[in-house]
View 1: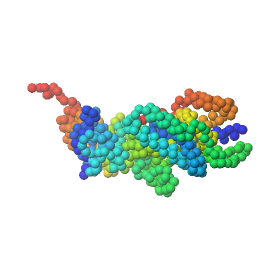
View 2: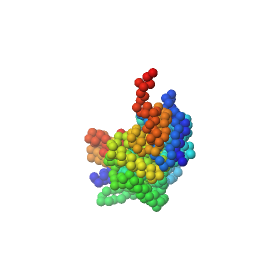
View 3: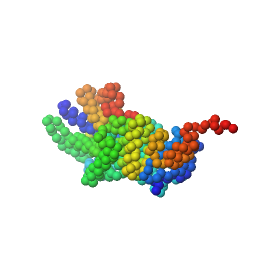
View 4: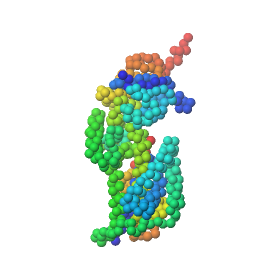
Length: 259
Length: 293
């Protein structure tokens, strides 16, 4: 069963083609990785999936439902959540509040609810708070729930971003370079957290630079180079694929000019 | 005597705070310095005046009517002017200039409809009576003004601090893009914020109109300047700052008029503001001056 499928997706900005004929399928309940050199178009893929920018051609579907043309908040409501390459938490709100913001669509909110529906409103708040604590505890941040988010370390801020993304109750979690700028022990820890998220039944789709991290974590990998998918498959197959090696290490020009 | 002045300062300061609160809310959430806020304040007082004089509405009903009228204008400004500018990614000075245009339009419309002369609420429509506590004479009107201003501000604080709506608004203030991708309907909340801010501005207009019992098409201009001063003093986009800054300005103005010079009250008040900003350039609670995209 495929969770997310991209078919012949293309994107160009004016005359500049960023993605061409990109097709792949992210299976449910696994960790899928998209890798590629800098500027290959990886983040553009995420921006297309989350509706931040429209594709120039092709189709994107979540569990068979077409996502093209939907506003980002609608796509979030259908079950896609994402984190950013540059951490975008709300620094002057508490951890708990950060996570609760993610529960937007599940909370009846507003002054009307506050006045006319106080009971339901209070119950909703209580449930939301409990769920937020639970999500923080999944990432072992529950003891810091009432601190302001900007007091966290870099690695912890990333985990808070995971918790906040999970608060939207997605089925698919998109992670944009989750270990960028992390030290090795933070990387190892995040790898565990991502596996744990997968084990709770979420689909995970990540973009990453760090080859070793991706190879150790993902069940399936697609490789993007100059806007095209050049390889797709299991980590072992990717590792030995000559096109991938060439994209990452450069072509051995000497070898080719030999008679 | 001092206690009497203190009561006057509280009355004026609470209205300044209410006005500045809407102003700073729009800046915090939409990142726009909405210079039509003063004109919307003026529209509020005329709306109440018309409701009271032409439709014989009781004052409380006129207050609600004025809120809806000014709020509606705030909403229109957002939908017709600010939204298209957002969609085109206009640099941040452009929406500010556009709102100056709105202010000029509203002011001259006010002049065209009502003339440039001073209008007053009929004496019999104002709450009469006064309360004497320990020798201080509190007009019923002043008590009403302070009560309305603080009730609305308290409501806003509770909503911002304790509800999901408030969390969503604060999240937008910190990062609209992240809020957007968390499923928050950012455009919808921009509209709501514009409505609420203008409604608060309109109420402030009614309250000042009642306090001085003088309504003119130009009344929005001085309060706009004071509002700007208050939110800079309090820290741009900071709700507590607007409250404290508003009370401070009301206090400084009343006290300098009472004890220094009745003509130079504003000069002294603004001089004080200037001194404070020399010491704390980002305002009392300032931190939102730079914001993330």
